[in-house]
Length: 325
Length: 256
Ligand SMILES: Cc1cc2nc3c(=O)[nH]c(=O)nc-3n(C[C@H](O)[C@H](O)[C@@H](O)COP(=O)(O)OP(=O)(O)OC[C@H]3O[C@@H](n4cnc5c(N)ncnc54)[C@H](O)[C@@H]3O)c2cc1C
Ligand SMILES: Cc1cc2nc3c(=O)[nH]c(=O)nc-3n(C[C@H](O)[C@H](O)[C@H](O)COP(=O)(O)OP(=O)(O)OC[C@H]3O[C@@H](n4cnc5c(N)ncnc54)[C@H](O)[C@@H]3O)c2cc1C
Image (cartoon, rainbow over all chains, first blue to last red; front, side):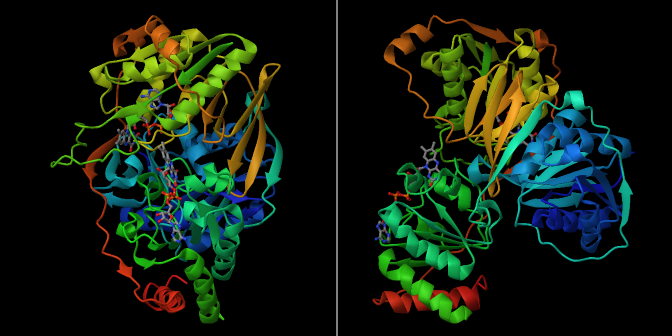
């Protein structure tokens, strides 16, 4: 019988990503309710040293595949490795991050494990011994409660929504052979072009300052960047700003951009079209700065200032700088 | 080349979504149905690939009778033929079942390349492409913003958090399309006229040999949680308002 709550831990360049601790803590909570163990799968090359960190967040046993073919990440190699160890151990629940990598890997695993999954979940609990998930659908215009009748019951969890809680265990590390068939690896990463700015990606940012058409031109984003610097935030944009060529496509927040879930989202000169709300509506605290009191963004905002952003934003930067000094 | 574009019909992005009183689904009345925006990028890229390298573009969609309209839209853009998987047994199908049906319908076609959207904006899962690739035992690269084809292989750009990957994949392969890949064309009037005569094969579950199942089931639909009314910081002086906002964010909301 399927048993155990498992996660697929995520690492990049030999460091565990924050989502891994969020997954571990959630798995611990669910496993405690079921009276089961928490397992983690960690794949990569030269990563054994970091496996122990997962025990701090409640993982009982880490299954480590350490092989050169597993670095950098490819769907082929990682899905083959994870599917193998999961099939051998038959966990009842398998959680991944709804990160770029987790979304990619999880869907391929659904195929290999012939099971069902809830994607990008914002809630996960045990009801009658089974996993019950909550996920936004229709771009957050409604929510669904999803139950899975096959094993493992899979889910990807939205980053930054589930708290990472320290809960140290005497974790055990178990090596496994991913038994990769080189002939089956049909994709190859030729090049990794790193974003030189070193800024945190929007999907992982805890604070985002976004600018829309109200910014009037690319040169004005400097005031957004100054505020972002003071807050340790990442800069985002509406589609109007991206389509105008003011900001790169990677900055777009919304239905056809990135879905973000920061603690604080500051929307400057953004009207709050339904497609924009679709991407940032689940932010914990939303601030709107807009000169039009009727802008729909105010209906979603926790705090708002109705005024010219060119007057307000630099003052806000100054005020935050003083407060945080 | 045998090129396939998977298209899903979804509610228009402006659509108001109302949950049925008993939580069993959403009210479909009054919804305007459109091609999933990401699938438009897939269809466009499929057409460009054909224009450069020759071959045929097949569009495929699973869904009720109204889905035929979306298939016709893709045909009007320039696709050559369509497959419509239509069977009430697929109502409420999950991603695995959907992908199984698509895989069964595409098997004999031996596609060189399959395009999907990176996610459908209703279910919002982004699963079907990868599952389909797995069932066909071909590689897949998700969420791409650039594609070059030469000598039986593609090179694609895939953005990830804080970086972009240049990935090579041998055909046959499946890719999922993202905004930025291209600018989708509109269907021309002659295109719309021609589309009416293009062949569309309609298949049901029995013809495909697929038993619909739902491993993942939405047991209840609920409206989004209500948000408490926001606080507008009032006053005439932008500096004073900014200062008050900063204080609220620090002391009340505790987010900075
Ligand atoms: C509101 C709602 C909630 C649902 N919740 C769940 C759930 O939690 N778990 C679950 O497993 N299933 C769920 N389903 C069922 C599932 O959404 C669909 O069966 C299915 O098509 C897969 O997911 P998706 O629509 O998110 O598509 P995605 O996986 O997001 O679609 C990606 C791409 O695959 C292609 N594609 C997808 N569907 C079709 C199609 N019908 N015809 C042709 N191409 C297609 C398109 O190119 C699309 O861009 C839900 C369905 C709805 C309508
Ligand atoms: C299929 C589809 C997908 C889409 N996907 C997305 C998406 O992913 N993300 C997205 O953002 N949009 C998306 N859109 C576009 C969306 O509908 C809106 O057009 C867009 O979000 C508008 O951007 P905006 O708010 O910056 O511009 P506008 O709507 O033009 O708003 C500008 C705002 O700035 C305010 N303003 C102007 N000057 C000042 C000033 N000096 N001080 C203060 N305020 C000022 C104005 O009052 C106004 O409210 C999509 C649309 C479609 C059809």
